[in-house]
Amino acid sequence: MARRAIAAVESGELKLIPDYHVATWNRWLQSNRDWCISRQLWWGHRIPAYFITVTDGKITGKESIMDKWILSRAAYAVSRCNTDMDTYNFTQYTTTLYDFWLYDLCDIYLESVKPVISSGTEEARERAKAALYHCVETGLRLISPVMPFLSEELWQHLPRLPNHPPSIVVHAYPEPSEYPFNDEQVEADVAFAMSVIRTVRSLRSDYELTNKTKTDLYASVGSEDDHRCLTSLIPLIETLASSNK
Image (cartoon, one colour):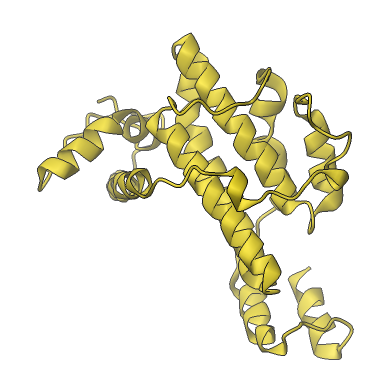
């Protein structure tokens, strides 16, 4: 598929505007690893589609740190996608969608929220479900212009809110003003925790430990702020670093 896309530009069958994006187009298609986006979207939407019943879909402001984080990432994606659409920067537009769906939503948030949905308190489960539904529904509307058929199929499986139209095609595109969830502190905290998790994963790989092998994890922190950050995100670290405590 990548070869055909490159050939289409080289032959003039497909024209990129502005044309200085041709180099980025070729580099991206030549260097990216294979990734089936439709498969990722399908599996990513199953929890909100089959396990969530939504009545009003409102975000209360009492969400957990990880709920606030994914809402903040969704707000960033909405803002970035609107800017890129307005400036015809489709390379960055698709990259933003890719990063939000693959890394933010599926790799990090979905994995972190599974223990909450399966064994958390009723209140925590409902808040996580609302945040997840909000982000998946928003993500599908963001991706609709470039993947209309897939986004429509997945959107039809989601619980419908009273104010929702019958099709994603006639649904309004997400606007930044609708997503006042930006939280730089939460994003910085999760970024620091993820750096710790990546280090732990690297060490586990060195010792050939599988994800099923749970180990105790001890961290030496350099400041009170680091201690606060890691303490508040212990559930995330335990889940993504395959640790007992």
